[in-house]
Image 1 (cartoon, rainbow, N blue to C red):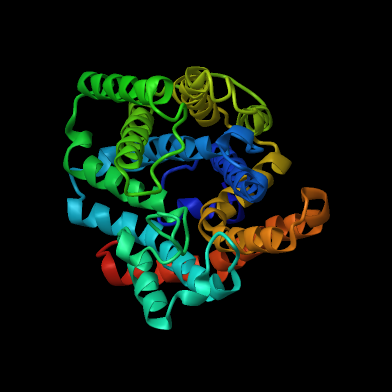
Image 2: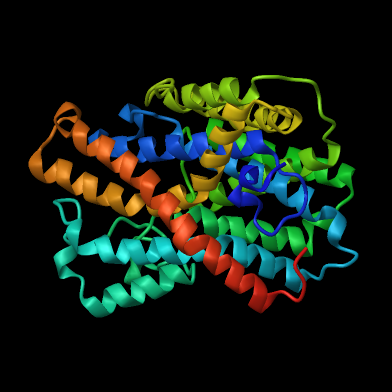
Length: 378
């Protein structure tokens, strides 16, 4: 694999990288952006367009468990827990900080009837920025937007909070489990998440972004099942011969995300069952097949590399502009057709900003931190 074909997601990793998984992660990140964009027109989850876009987070968690298991499971004879946590900090945290800073810069431009940001002092904003940058969940007294989010400056940071929890659990506990015990953990967590989805009060697993009990329970189950399932896949993985997984799998992710709410408010269990099939069957299968394919098609490789490069930065920088878009739509009472140019500009601008952040900030900062914090570069 030539240097220009190696995804930025593989920074500091010497093992061959899964190109197709990079591409699928990028497709999932784009569906998240579109899901958030359509929140401006929804009255609830029942009428949200790109209705199941939040399931991309479960796909991300499965990917994370798979990649962490693949990259680190055989290193523990020479790698300490401290070094592992440093590596994960270097990989994840620079964009956490960038997302918080962008959210703070954009904050006062995002006022609308849903939240009056003019009442927030500069001091409160600075404190909120520091809290978000350190990935400390905001308690009600520090939740400056008033929506109950753990990270009111950059909502998607909640999944990074759980990502860190998953990495810590892996370092101290989960990696030590024999494969059979890990399988039991995956089964139990999957059953718990299925119960939450099918028989829970919401009929979905769009949770984890707030400090309420149902969000903490649901978010923990999403992380515990998906991350552990990805790790289990990395242990039992035996590649099969497949072709076209990126294009077919990417289309599947888009379709699954865009499926309307199932069952309405009267049959919540139907939607929960649909989501259970997605996170328990379809997503693990996509990861398995994506890891199996070894494409040599140059177009597919380049598309997957680009999508893999921008996937994490895009996820971490787009949401402050979603707040801005939401305020614009609400303040001007716009329909989607009327605001379509702004929607296109938001998606396009977010992709460009993500790429600029990657090249001008994320990669240089990770190189600097790698030299300063790690004794050796593997």
